[in-house]
Amino acid sequence: MATTYGDWLKQQRETAGLTQQQLADMAVMTRSHIAHIEAGRRIPSKEDARRLDGALNTGNVLSSFLPAEHAAVADYFESARLLEQQAVMIREFALSFIPGILQTERYARAVLGTSFPRVSDEECDRRLVTRLERAKILDDPVTPVVWALLDEAVLRRQIGGRDVMAEQLSHLAALGESGRIQVHVLPFALGVHPLLSNMLTLLWFEDQPPTAYGEGLHMGKVHDVPSVVQDLQHRYDFALGNALPLKESLAFLRATAKDYENHG
Image: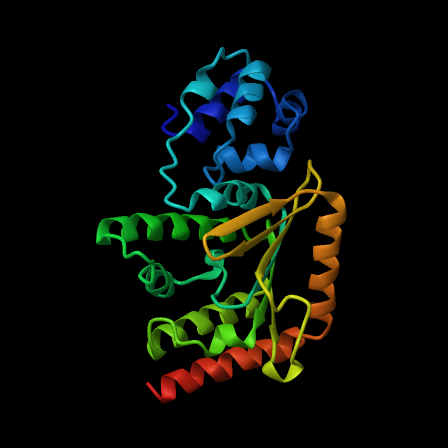
């Protein structure tokens, strides 16, 4: 008996005698996206659900019973959040905070607690749940491929206190040492670099052109114009070329975490 949206989709697909690839072809989607939906790691967009209904001859059932996401995010980030869930490769640049999908619970709570104007504890909890849900894309050991390029300021700024920072940086180092993510640090000694003015996320997909997302105070923008996306990719590559290599970056994270622990 199907108990979740993904279970029900899988049941309907198997009843129709279709493989994931066959359904993907009929619904103009990718096989991996179908697999993520069935496993509960993704929620299809309304357009995806409409095409799935058409491929499976299920009327508008899949469209009508999309799970309620209750995502507590800023309006300007919603489009980027949905793209994040579909990406096969994500490259993050962070100037002030650890990227959301890489944050520990205590670090995320400390970041969300700085909202201005201040929000209620209940709203903070809602936002925290959404942020931790976003991080579940890392539960898949392979997809998406994630690179994190961090300005040294991200490691030095104490968010939540020394013990929270030690835990957060140790978490990042562990993800890097396991091979789940690539992490690189842009040291202060580098001086000016092409990404110094903003945070940036670059996203690649199996079935659509790459996009980019930039964010500032109370604003965020998804870029899909090819020339703009390519320019941002080049800026990222240039900065990455001047960052510390993976092994040195991981050692930097471990040493900084140890420093927070020793002086806590």
